[in-house]
Length: 404
Image (tube, rainbow, N blue to C red; front, side, top):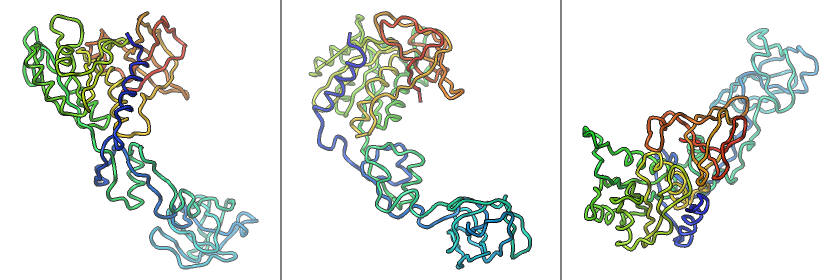
């Protein structure tokens, strides 16, 4: 059995050795459709940001040198609003009423917020608190200068990035095209979601969770349905799946009488590079390739499937997309309860994590094994316990993965 780290190294080394110059092609999409896509073009600021000295609070634009003695009464010579600047110059003994986001009038060098003033008359105001120069305002270009790099190629576009792109006039965005991922669930016991299972049957949940993980990672799922534990049916489905960038088959990869997937892989010339990983859940994880298609065989138990996808398939998808970060994001928390490990395998234990007092706290979630979707649905993290590390006790630090 290979350690998790070695398995991931093999997946990524194959991807790098077979890398086309462009990995995935670039496509242009409307800005509104770019959220969570992988940016494929460096973005430069098209202007100074902000484009003028602006107020960051409602109040009065003043000259700091007029506030030597507080309180002080100043004459109000105008009003500056966002989108409607005051065409005035603030001179000695004067101020200008100003709103958040409005341009700073000439002659002024600070903003006193309205809460620290009181009106004396329609044309005068008493300043109750002094300010320092540049207080209450943002100078032109303080956020970014024209031509400055503001978003780097490889970044996954987030909510703030969407606003930043809009603010820089990007109505369309260059992103990585989505790799296609074929998903096949195997097993005579499986029925479709809308069917009522017989006593010896279960609904096909894996196709839905895997397809959701594929979409979350940034790829395009192609659900090919259920393949029965029959060589001809498996051949038909796998033949279809090998036409995609990535093929995922869940179930049928262990050592049972009806675990036929690796046999069919061999018939189609798939070069299998590993078929066991020293992790729990997820031991019978298979990886190989044929031509330009990456091939995974994932365990049939739902939690095993989700864990194996997160550890091996997701990093590959992100690499193909040219994402800047491909490895699983590992965080650290303090254990609130003991967490046990299999002596021969690394464990990824469903857990409940919370953030309190400046740090993460985590405890194993109640679950009944790798088929327990009820238990997993109540968890929000996976504790990572290295093999041969024994039991991690309460109070120890543990690494974990957030489940998004």
